[in-house]
Length: 560
Image (cartoon, rainbow, N blue to C red; front, side, top):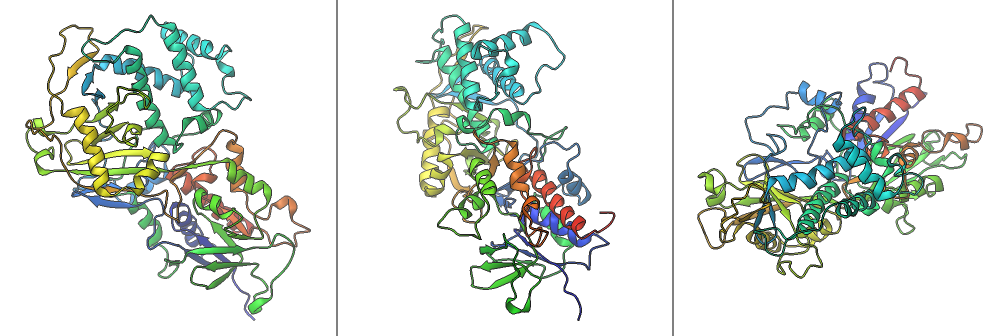
């Protein structure tokens, strides 16, 4: 009787799952050693990578950036498959748009010097939190910055973020308050009705906080752990997007797998595994300790399951009503899953009408617009601007002169956005833009120290209605049952240790009884299992390779 090959079932055909499948299948020593299968609940491969098109341009509905090209395997693959160049326009093809136009609510354009001042403070605070500020340097600006941090916490700055479990949001706001305490009395800004220096600085600071919320997926920075910021790593070098789309990398990984190895539309509803030493003999498959239950009622037996579903699905799967795991996952695993954060980040793409498509005369080009809003509780706020627009930082062309605009939303407003109709979104954005760009011109001061350049001209040819949008496309990651969110973050109360715990296979090696419980039954991969590169595609990629290597080493595949 021919011995059965170990059956490895990878759940999820995203970056982590396909990286693992590629590694297991293409290993020259083990190619014929395993019975390999990838099951995907949705109708496509890619997971949180989803390249699409809108308004004639290539866009990313999910993962967008390669965060540093130095040492990035994702960048290396994109280079090898010639995906970094394309004749078709694509999102962020010219990198991060520079020279933003920052406008305060009511249509007042703020001077670059005022914006730069508070933006530099925010950047320094983030560099400090990430442990990369002022290493080996000393000058008056740096000394003043350290004094400001020390004043905010009344401690040596190096002790900030210790055992007290400080949040990033609290850190940022405490130093901002210390900044205000250290400056002279706030003055009204000439040319900006009802805007004082303090109110403008707070609005700009909040704008940067909103950017940070989308970068981290933490809907509230008060929930984001300060200490973990210094553990997060990016690759050195330029941050770029992929000209032919992130999906081209996914398709490259999948292309080496034989037809039929990836099964789409196979949504998993339950996983049975063996915490105790016990061997099932059903169907004569005594050597396959696990069962995977699918939504169509079918069952698949497996020796090893590599689970690559998003953290949001795991959070739902450990709930008492879900029963995804039988028996339930051990406490050490469920507690780590519960402590870690998993947020919602959505993108909104808008198509400009042809008269404002940025391909006409210069006056019709839409700017990289940064929006400084009044506080939500301010009586001065424009009552018709929807609350969800007040939580985004910018609206800008996806590349210079594109007719497609993009804006980012995180947290509660991202979920609210998913429930709105296209008409409600276009109306809300139009109302907001009208407040910022469609104001009558007001002569600005000629002073070299001006902080407000007066009200801006209408965009376009003076049309009373200002900018017009023809259609909208937005992502809906929060309510998609296959994702239930966008990416992970280290929440207050959790730490990098929880990311490591999430990565541990089951059953835990230390609890195996005389090696009688089948080892490596459930393995975990995905961006939320990588301690230093969580929330990124390369973190997901590395995690897939890690678990593939774990299985190869388990079967003593030499030289892998």
